[in-house]
Length: 259
Image: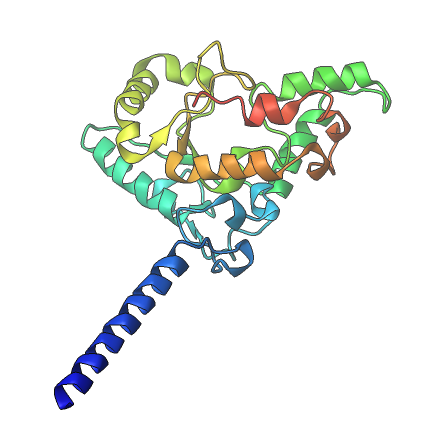
């Protein structure tokens, strides 16, 4: 009788254990709702973990725990921020480049919406126009956006993109600049970086920027989130913003990159 009782008890325990395992498996297959994601978000980010404010640059990188100040000896000036993961990848690439006497000094990284608006308004106001002259405004936008983004549309908002050494096109076509560019083309991908604005004729938007390199493990999820969440209605508050929809700026200048 004792043996029968023991066997029944063992069978019950095995059944309970299997049920718990099945429940654990079922729970692990359920996706976590966006509202329950940890803050700050885990890396790599998912589209639902990235708020509009971050995609649009409407935040302070100095108070966001995912961002970090770049050490001054790696930059051309102080108080430049980027994402922590971007900085780690950059340091590895920088150390590799230094072994070949190439210095990848950062001249720009994270730029907030307000900082981008300052740049935009300065360039906008450099060419006088009448308040209601739509034709002149369109021409201004095309001129500015050869190299500069509208506030709310810049990849520099995300802390994933870095500008190296010089933003002058001529620097990168000969001498030390050309050698650095050739090194980046051959090696940057090993560290997760790519050049978003190339000479590829099928690409739309900005002119080629040989100085601008993006950390793909972060920037690609950001771009995906931007495509899902941001519309022209979200991008306002600066001169010419009323034309962003009619000129299809998001499609041509945010989504029109090389890869």
